[in-house]
Length: 477
Image 1 (cartoon, rainbow, N blue to C red):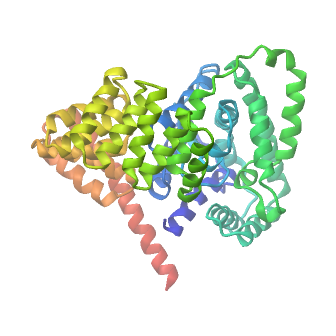
Image 2: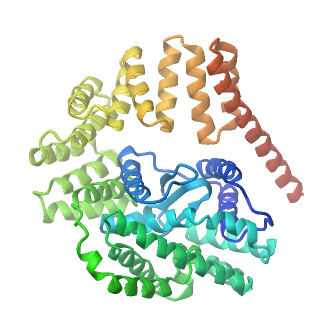
Image 3: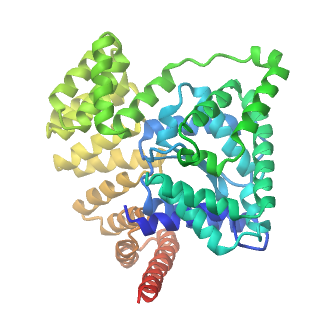
């Protein structure tokens, strides 16, 4: 990953914490900033576009949002493939949790606690308030904070953390105090939202305790979360006191079944965790608990990921003997057949899963890809169109639907989907090329309007990217 691109994203993130902008922003401006922010994140980070993982996080977020007052914009929840402990709220309802922090959690209530806190930052408009008020930190300090966060996130050790801590120490004390006030307000709101949504606040307390436990060797080991969310000790004390004062309410809250969390957590670890460590973990687990379907599932996923597909199929079949007709297990077996080039067998298994659960995103995606490989492009189009109706922001589905349309001679539709794909991926030159072809080929007035909006956005981003590149070259001379 390009370090300069990452620095740009972290500058945006830190700008929200310690901005140098002296005016308030409107809801519309925050939504515009949100689009810019997401473009930068998509260009430089790997957002996990796994429907099972993203849908799980979104369901938790939506459950919390359901007990809140009406919000000025829709919220979106993302998991980023980063092993550091962090979660943060971006402008316009964008909420992120790093895969490393998710993997460290042990229950849905812990995840819900983290998400409720980030939602509260957005609902309190802390992002826009910081943009409006924080005039006291100079650009040099801002750059130092950004570099420290960046270096810490990429594991460069004590020097990175020293940069970060030094920069923060140089900042005005008032700015840090404001951040602590924001944290307190977000905790107060978050605890209220959590309990109304049926989640015990003991989850956020457990999560913060885990984050604090990462600070093993002093300041040089401070987790990123503790830099972007200060006063963790104060927060633990406050939340503990709140739980004691509201014990009668907490006792009445429901207990969450562990299955949804356990299976999502196993998937995240097996598909996106450190490869060697994960393989060792599941090898040991399968020896200890050979009768658990969840362990066979996780082991199968990591075996598929490392290319041992025959062994992976055995694990998924073993899991199916414990949980017959489970669509998730069937889809993983079908996906492994697909990766092994056994498209007809894959389709047989995937159809079985879709008969049980017709809207399973991954099932539709791999069925569509099987049909493309078998040159059945009409069938492929139907699968991928169905997927994008329920999950409109699935980039890879756009790409393969574009391929299917292209093979059917539907040039305008093909270029439109490919243009959307490249725009989301931050490949703006390719996006412009495809969208211009789509504009030339379509005769639908409504579609032309949609393409014009996307094309304008792609051209602006492409021009901005060229300008940034030229600026960097001039500075290096």
